Length: 152
Image 1 (cartoon, helix red, strand yellow):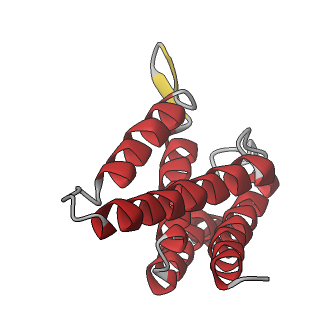
Image 2 (cartoon, rainbow, N blue to C red; image 1 turned 180 degrees about the vertical axis):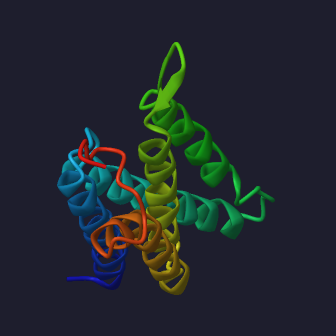
Protein backbone atom coordinates (compact mmCIF):
# COMPACT_ATOMS: atom_id res chain seq x y z
CA UNK A 1 0.00 0.00 0.00
CA UNK A 2 1.58 3.26 -1.08
CA UNK A 3 1.72 6.45 1.00
CA UNK A 4 -0.87 8.37 -1.05
CA UNK A 5 -3.41 5.58 -0.60
CA UNK A 6 -2.81 5.45 3.17
CA UNK A 7 -3.31 9.22 3.40
CA UNK A 8 -6.55 8.99 1.39
CA UNK A 9 -7.76 6.08 3.51
CA UNK A 10 -7.08 7.98 6.73
CA UNK A 11 -8.62 11.26 5.60
CA UNK A 12 -11.73 9.87 3.92
CA UNK A 13 -12.11 7.16 6.56
CA UNK A 14 -12.01 9.64 9.44
CA UNK A 15 -14.47 11.88 7.61
CA UNK A 16 -16.81 8.92 7.14
CA UNK A 17 -16.45 7.88 10.79
CA UNK A 18 -17.19 11.34 12.18
CA UNK A 19 -20.06 11.85 9.74
CA UNK A 20 -21.49 8.45 10.61
CA UNK A 21 -21.30 9.13 14.33
CA UNK A 22 -23.11 12.41 13.79
CA UNK A 23 -25.71 10.57 11.73
CA UNK A 24 -26.36 8.15 14.59
CA UNK A 25 -27.63 11.08 16.64
CA UNK A 26 -29.84 12.21 13.77
CA UNK A 27 -31.25 8.67 13.47
CA UNK A 28 -31.95 8.56 17.21
CA UNK A 29 -33.76 11.90 16.87
CA UNK A 30 -35.79 10.31 14.03
CA UNK A 31 -34.66 12.88 11.48
CA UNK A 32 -34.68 12.09 7.76
CA UNK A 33 -30.96 12.76 7.21
CA UNK A 34 -29.39 10.04 9.35
CA UNK A 35 -26.29 7.92 9.47
CA UNK A 36 -26.02 7.11 5.75
CA UNK A 37 -26.66 10.68 4.67
CA UNK A 38 -24.16 12.22 7.09
CA UNK A 39 -21.56 9.54 6.38
CA UNK A 40 -21.88 10.13 2.63
CA UNK A 41 -21.72 13.91 2.96
CA UNK A 42 -18.64 13.81 5.20
CA UNK A 43 -16.75 11.21 3.19
CA UNK A 44 -17.68 12.88 -0.11
CA UNK A 45 -16.53 16.24 1.20
CA UNK A 46 -13.28 14.69 2.37
CA UNK A 47 -12.76 13.12 -1.04
CA UNK A 48 -13.44 16.36 -2.92
CA UNK A 49 -11.14 18.32 -0.61
CA UNK A 50 -8.40 15.71 -1.02
CA UNK A 51 -8.84 15.69 -4.80
CA UNK A 52 -8.64 19.48 -4.84
CA UNK A 53 -5.46 19.38 -2.78
CA UNK A 54 -3.87 16.84 -5.12
CA UNK A 55 -4.92 18.66 -8.29
CA UNK A 56 -3.66 21.99 -6.96
CA UNK A 57 -0.38 20.31 -5.98
CA UNK A 58 0.04 18.87 -9.47
CA UNK A 59 -0.77 22.16 -11.21
CA UNK A 60 1.37 24.24 -8.83
CA UNK A 61 4.33 21.98 -9.55
CA UNK A 62 4.13 23.14 -13.17
CA UNK A 63 4.54 26.78 -12.10
CA UNK A 64 0.94 27.87 -12.71
CA UNK A 65 -0.70 29.88 -9.92
CA UNK A 66 -4.00 28.45 -8.71
CA UNK A 67 -6.60 29.39 -6.10
CA UNK A 68 -6.56 26.58 -3.56
CA UNK A 69 -9.89 27.62 -2.02
CA UNK A 70 -12.00 27.05 -5.14
CA UNK A 71 -12.82 23.42 -4.40
CA UNK A 72 -13.86 24.32 -0.87
CA UNK A 73 -15.97 27.27 -2.00
CA UNK A 74 -17.91 25.13 -4.46
CA UNK A 75 -18.24 22.39 -1.86
CA UNK A 76 -19.78 24.89 0.57
CA UNK A 77 -22.19 26.13 -2.08
CA UNK A 78 -23.23 22.68 -3.25
CA UNK A 79 -23.80 21.33 0.23
CA UNK A 80 -25.68 24.51 1.14
CA UNK A 81 -28.05 23.72 -1.72
CA UNK A 82 -28.43 20.17 -0.42
CA UNK A 83 -29.17 21.46 3.08
CA UNK A 84 -31.67 23.93 1.68
CA UNK A 85 -33.65 20.97 0.39
CA UNK A 86 -33.98 19.71 3.97
CA UNK A 87 -35.81 22.87 5.09
CA UNK A 88 -39.59 22.72 4.97
CA UNK A 89 -41.68 25.86 5.27
CA UNK A 90 -45.40 25.88 5.88
CA UNK A 91 -47.77 28.62 6.98
CA UNK A 92 -46.43 29.48 10.42
CA UNK A 93 -43.57 27.06 10.90
CA UNK A 94 -40.18 26.11 9.55
CA UNK A 95 -38.77 22.60 9.98
CA UNK A 96 -35.41 21.13 9.12
CA UNK A 97 -33.11 24.03 9.99
CA UNK A 98 -31.08 21.93 12.42
CA UNK A 99 -30.79 19.13 9.87
CA UNK A 100 -29.68 21.62 7.20
CA UNK A 101 -27.12 23.14 9.56
CA UNK A 102 -25.89 19.65 10.50
CA UNK A 103 -25.48 18.75 6.82
CA UNK A 104 -23.43 21.91 6.29
CA UNK A 105 -21.28 21.32 9.39
CA UNK A 106 -20.70 17.65 8.50
CA UNK A 107 -19.48 18.76 5.07
CA UNK A 108 -17.03 21.10 6.80
CA UNK A 109 -15.94 18.24 9.02
CA UNK A 110 -15.33 16.03 5.99
CA UNK A 111 -13.51 18.79 4.11
CA UNK A 112 -11.24 19.36 7.12
CA UNK A 113 -10.41 15.64 7.12
CA UNK A 114 -9.82 15.77 3.37
CA UNK A 115 -7.12 18.42 3.69
CA UNK A 116 -5.58 16.74 6.74
CA UNK A 117 -6.81 19.24 9.35
CA UNK A 118 -7.89 16.59 11.84
CA UNK A 119 -7.89 18.94 14.82
CA UNK A 120 -10.42 21.20 13.08
CA UNK A 121 -12.53 18.18 12.09
CA UNK A 122 -12.61 16.93 15.68
CA UNK A 123 -13.52 20.39 16.99
CA UNK A 124 -16.40 20.60 14.50
CA UNK A 125 -17.49 17.09 15.53
CA UNK A 126 -17.51 17.95 19.24
CA UNK A 127 -19.35 21.21 18.55
CA UNK A 128 -21.99 19.53 16.38
CA UNK A 129 -22.66 16.71 18.82
CA UNK A 130 -22.72 19.18 21.71
CA UNK A 131 -25.31 21.28 19.90
CA UNK A 132 -27.42 18.24 19.01
CA UNK A 133 -27.22 16.47 22.38
CA UNK A 134 -27.42 19.39 24.80
CA UNK A 135 -31.18 20.00 24.40
CA UNK A 136 -31.88 16.26 24.74
CA UNK A 137 -29.82 16.07 27.95
CA UNK A 138 -31.51 19.18 29.37
CA UNK A 139 -34.99 17.77 28.63
CA UNK A 140 -34.04 14.48 30.32
CA UNK A 141 -32.77 16.41 33.34
CA UNK A 142 -36.02 18.40 33.49
CA UNK A 143 -34.25 21.69 32.85
CA UNK A 144 -35.84 22.30 29.44
CA UNK A 145 -39.43 21.89 28.27
CA UNK A 146 -39.95 19.21 25.63
CA UNK A 147 -42.52 20.50 23.12
CA UNK A 148 -43.22 16.91 22.01
CA UNK A 149 -44.61 15.95 25.42
CA UNK A 150 -48.35 16.49 25.58
CA UNK A 151 -48.69 16.14 29.36
CA UNK A 152 -46.89 19.44 30.15
